[in-house]
Image 1 (cartoon, rainbow, N blue to C red):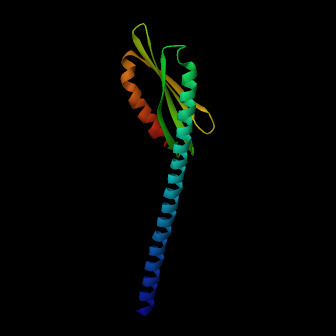
Image 2: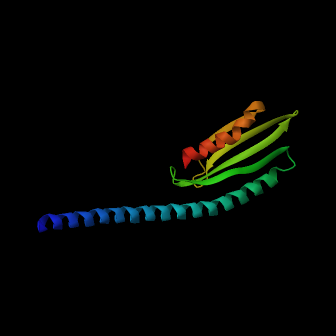
Image 3: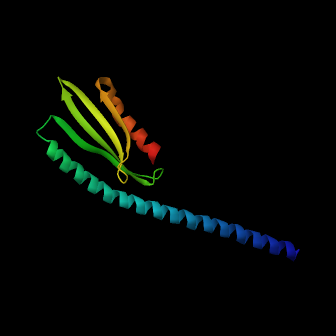
Amino acid sequence: MRFWLAIGVCLAMALTGCGTLRSVKSDYQSSKEFGRKVQCETYASKTKQEFKEEVRELAGKNDIFYSVERIFYSSKRNSCVCILRESSVVQGERFEDTQTLDVLTKEDLGFKSYSGNELDNLRKDVDKQVKSLE
């Protein structure tokens, strides 16, 4: 009887230890991801500043408004991703373009244009793209 009790206690301790190990590993991963998000915020500030400087050079040359739509850490890419937005009005019709870039590698991840009734989809598309890359 004592033998089975000892085995039960050892098994319980082993299972508790595995849970603790998983918890420590999960905490470590959360901490690491948090650190990457903080780094991305640093890159985000730098990217926004660079973008503002480039926009200043373009200002006055056309009637296009440029903005940073979203910057976020992508765990799928293990990188910081930026969605830029370009807005313009041509002959009374509004146009919007979005361009997605990997901030660290400067890789172009996609471009999409919107006009007329498609403008309602812009926010939904941006949210969908963010979710697909997070």
